[in-house]
Amino acid sequence: MNPAARKQLVAELLNNAVIESQEELVKALKKRGVEVTQTTASRDLLEIGAMRGKDSGGRFRYILGGSVTRPSAKSQNLLLSVVASGNLVVARTPPGGAQLLAGFIDSAITSGDLRSGIGSIAGDDTVIVVAKTATGGNTLAKEITALVDGEPLKSAKAVKGLKVMKAANSANSANSANSAKAAKKRSR
Amino acid sequence: MNPAARKQLVAELLNNAVIESQEELVKALKKRGVEVTQTTASRDLLEIGAMRGKDSGGRFRYILGGSVTRPSAKSQNLLLSVVASGNLVVARTPPGGAQLLAGFIDSAITSGDLRSGIGSIAGDDTVIVVAKTATGGNTLAKEITALVDGEPLKSAKAVKGLKVMKAANSANSANSANSAKAAKKRSR
DNA sequence: GGGAGAATTGCATAATTATGCAGATTGACG
DNA sequence: CGTCAATCTGCATAATTATGCAATTCTCCC
Image (cartoon, rainbow over the protein chains, first blue to last red):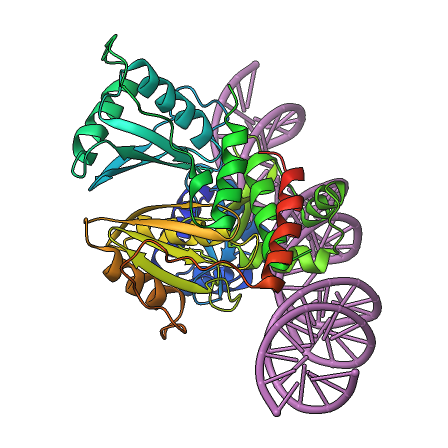
């Protein structure tokens, strides 16, 4: 059997069965009439981008990972998804991109480009934006999407009396410490 | 150093640097004042669901896995309490464990295991999870509890007011202070 | 305070995976 | 057909990772 076809078979096996080790892969291949050693199994797995880890059941397993690379440039794919619920919007970013997006959103709020938002708080890859009204999440989500997509939402009218939300006045001490850390990172 | 905090640090390292081997992880941790052996590094990586493979450049690399692999939150006592308020859920973890739990929750949301949640945000020992519907906090709290641990945790009960997060007791406060100090050293 | 039991960690080592090297196989070309 | 170059494969072994076990530390709880 030629190597390309064998790799294809390995990929199918990984998707349709639990392969816990290379020795197990060797056996699975043998059962299908393909005899190779652990050496070749190792090479095949590396070449098709398989990865090994433990699944939810605590067992080892090889899987075919997607892209191994993590985005480092946060300019293009900064906003991965936007979902609204009630007065909140949850925006997703690549790991580490939340602070940047939050700053962008805060800036838009201050400038009046995001009229229905009153502030945001960022973690590592998630930003929560608070809408002005109790049911304003949907509208806000659309505004954020449009804004990041480059739609000009320009408005010279500043929102009055609104301020970037800080959790420092929260009743919870631990949470305020967390938020303080996040806020510090957002210096601009 | 607290194991949960160390695991969070490991997760950050994996996201922000190329870690090619466990020995390299040991060195990276040492540079940040955390001294452990390869044994502990191996266990940490398995418990946070890291996987090893080759990236596009042909180098080995550990990454945090996606849907197939997930952290064993239960065995780590990662989830201390869950309370709901309106469309929000507040989950508490040991100091430094919030990022880890949030990753676990986000993974569950992405994979569809947490259907009533849309996203989470983490501080140091607190995670806020947003429910899909305006009153979905209660349901979400139950789902989170069931997901992390087959049986309900102690006092995983929803409350109505916003004063849901009780301040940590004295012992925990000390730990939180230490953890906050450690967190300050971390770059992100 | 102090004892019981759980959790954490490192050592030594088992288990597993990766790789240098040499031989085998294939395909192109004169 | 013979030769060369490239690819593929397995063996032996290096490199790396996982784990049993005992020692230590932490957590309750009385």
